[in-house]
Every structure is written in structure tokens, then in C-alpha cells.
Length: 438
Image: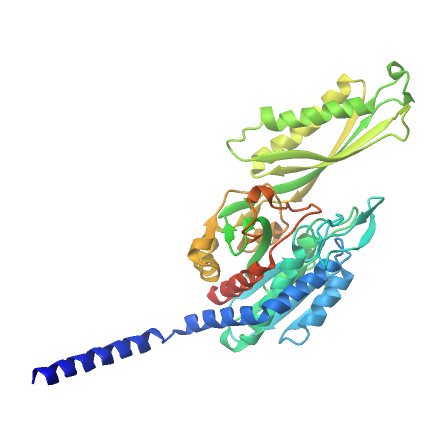
């Protein structure tokens, strides 16, 4: 009798255990969608890497992304999307309409390369060349925009395959000229908005990512509110009096005055700006003047960038640049003509949206691989979209894990390099944000 009773108890335990195992395998609809995203991201990973390598090999500068535009449109044509080309000159907008009521979600990737000659030894390294500001330069995707495009194309493929499980519309925005339009031209996010992107497609929320060559591959970093700085441009012309190089006392040397102005600009940041409030940067990126070793020229011009994370600091720094340049030039007997061009605003992550969608990023990368960071003095024209609709912009790690951060290649340099194994996390993150947006 005892043996029979024991056997019955064992059978009940086994039955209960088996039932428990069956129950753990039952997934709710949301979990099924998450699994589908993960499976499709893995399936499409090699295709996305191939797309990225093609784009990397054939980069184009801002507002000149004609071949890039055609390549994107060609590779999206078999998806269940409508495609518009030519917005903001070379942009591509693809729309996935589920036919069911729901949010209209914008996903954005930038397309343009930089006037940088590649130094990385890759079989798909860029050999492209062009003329930029009167100089012959190489062209390189030295900021990862090729990765952004490929990841968004892969995301479009994933979500198109999941159309029956989705609601609303997804607008895939492939944007030109994030690095800035050529002189005298409009471009980038500002031009896409001006031409009606937000209103025409009814976009209600915008998401975007940026690869990071100094953050571990497979990780995601973000920050609520101000993530990246406002970026403004300045030009300063120092005008002196041309004279023979052997008799500088007979003229006014604008080169020496320019050198003093450059040092003076740096004291605006180091001695006149409260950096405990927010970071700020003034950088002179180019200086030109003179044609011969023994002639002091009449004029020197310098151009540069201003980065600020606070609008009141931004205004004060602009005023001090003008005042500093003019007074230093005057002390040398020269004059200074200062022009400041307002550029990108602060890239602002809507705090409510960021908090709401943080679990989506954690699902894509794993909770331990998502962390908050301090603001960056880099800039992004995604900021224009975030002025119009709630936006969330985040960084996707691309640094190989066997390389220390201090040794990692920086953005906008000839040695810029990323680990492509993180693309799968990028696709999962964008797709997850879409299915979790209500």
C-alpha cells in the first residue's frame, strides 16, 4: 500500500512538473513579437553587414548622396512599403502602412560621408575622392552613417515582414547632409522638415541611433533631456596692412593678430565660462592667409565651431567671441569681422518618452548593457526633429571589446573603425521601440 501511495505521489509530481514546463513555454503576444524581432534580426544580419560595406566603399558628401539614394531605394523596392526619393535633394522616405489605426512613428538614419581620406586597411575601404573647399580630398564614412543606413534598412525589412502584427504607420527616413550642407545650400533635417516631412506623413514620434566607436559593441547608452550640444559656426576675418616680410613695422600683421585671437578665444572657455554648469567648446578648425614666405598678407580668415549645452551660455559665448576678436585685433592695429551662423540646437530627448521606452532598449540589448551617460559636446541635426515631435536618440556601441577605450579610433578621423557585430542590437532596438510605442 505504501509503495502504491508513493508511486501515485511521484506520478503527481511528474505531472505537475510537466505542466509547469508547458506553462513556461506559453508566450504572450508581446513576447512572441519580441522573439520574432530577434529571429529576423539574426536572419538579416549578414545582409545588413553587406549593405554597410557597400555604402562604406562608396561614400558621398552632404547633398551629393545620389548613388546612395538609388542604392537604398533599389534595396527597399521589394518590401511592402511606398518609397519617395529626392526629399532634401537626395533623401529617401519609405512608409510601411499597416492599414490599422495606431501611432505614426519615424525612424531616421543619416546618409552622408566626410571629407576624410581613409587609412583603415579593409577590403571595402573607400577610395573615393572629390574637391572640397578648393582642396582635393578623400571621402570616408568616418562617423558611421553607413552603419545607420544599413541598420535602418534591416529594420525596415524586419518590420515589413511583421506587418500583420503591427499597427499604425512606420516612416523610415534616410536623411542626407547631417554633417551640414555645402556653403550656400540648405540641407539635412531642417530642409526635410521645411519640405513637409513631419506634416506630410503625420509623424508623431521620432527615434534615431548613432554608432559609437568608443563604446563597447552590443551596448546602448542614452540620456534624458540634453544629450548632445548645440553646434554653431563662426568665421573671423582679421584685416591688416600688407607689407614686405622683412619690414613688419611698416604694415599690420594679421597673422600675428590671428594667433592672439585664437588664444583669446580659448580663455573665453577656460576663464570666463562656468563649466560647472554645462560643458562648452570653441574650436578653430581652419586658418588661412598669405601666399608667399616673404609677404605679410592683408587678411587672414579662420573658421570654427562653438558647442554649448545651455541656451543662456550659448548667447553669452557668442557675444564674447565677437568682443574678444574685435578688441584683440584693434590692439594690433587690425580689424576683425566676426560672423556667427546658428546651427543645430541641443539634441533633446523627451524625458517622458525616454523613461517610457527605456525597457524597450533593455529588451534589445539586455538590461546590463544599457546605461545612462553624461551629455556629449558632439552635435546632431536629429535635434530639429525633436523640436517638432517627442524624440529619443541613443548611442549604439561599436568598439571591439578587446580594444581599450583610450586606444579606440575616434569619429571624424582616418582610422575610424567599428565592430559590425553590434548591428543586430541596433535593428532589435529600433524594431522594439516601434512595437512598444502606443
